[in-house]
Length: 129
Image 1 (spheres, rainbow, N blue to C red):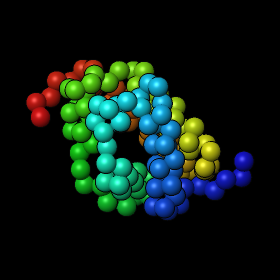
Image 2: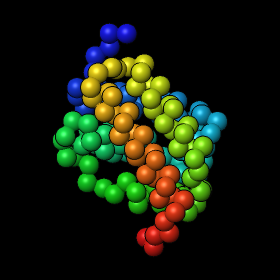
Image 3: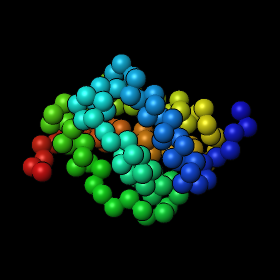
């Protein structure tokens, strides 16, 4: 494919925007983002870009607790394996369309780990938040 690797915050933001374009129309998870917890995209995109910039480019700009937000969603709409699988599939497909390289591979590994951890925690933890 000869696509370049993720190198900048702009690369991450472009990826995130394309990814969420797919997410909102996905039959399995779209309604989580459009009906269950309708997102303010202009607020959400910079936050999630911060999250991935921290993880992938080692720029510590994300200061929130990602798990807390997902616990809150899980209380309203229980998140199941099929939701995490759909999220990960779209994440990887979108990455493959735009990038290839070491950071892109790291993004896939981290996304898989995050999806697995969140799935485990949503189904096994009962936090008081």
